[in-house]
Image 1 (cartoon, one colour):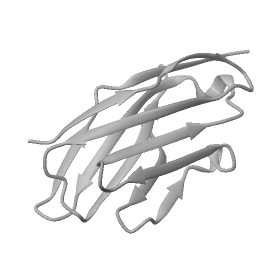
Image 2 (cartoon, rainbow, N blue to C red):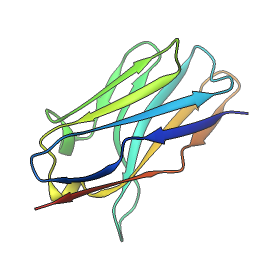
Image 3 (tube, rainbow, N blue to C red):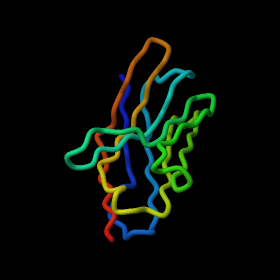
Image 4 (cartoon, rainbow, N blue to C red):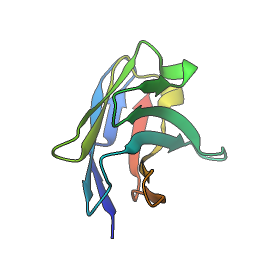
Length: 117
């Protein structure tokens, strides 16, 4: 069974930075995609960034140049460094893992990020 534990959310003023971390337990195989999604109040969940086990990265246009995703395959962790935060970045951020061998998708419990103006 795969479980994800997130940490690092909180409150920050506009222009500030936060770093989110997510640790996976269980078998996620060596071929997978790890990423972060977010859901603001009244809005649908949306992609923030993903990174494959081979290192291919995708960012939402709204965070390009401000957020950086990284991972440690040995530790089965994924991180999201968020800089120059804006009030519109306020949301619950969810860690996601998609195991591509014997397909499985798992979500974390979510961590709240609040950016005040």
